[in-house]
Image (tube, rainbow, N blue to C red):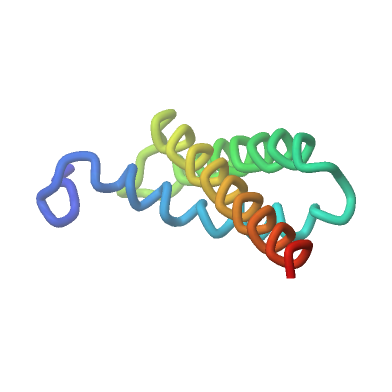
Length: 99
């Protein structure tokens, strides 16, 4: 199968970009329930499980194939999303305390 745009492994970058908002929004949803350390774990595990589920179901679609590396890219995207959210929250909280 020819890679989209002719760039090798561009699909991995797309997976990361798709799951980044997923991780960000999960972190936002869980911020009131758990401390930041727990949110890292929960969001990363959710991203992994959802990515595995997505790849599993993709195996049943003709013309598509499942890939472990796609699930890894999904997990990385979720991880980056939670990192961005928590970094942003830390900056907002420190500005509120200072101001």
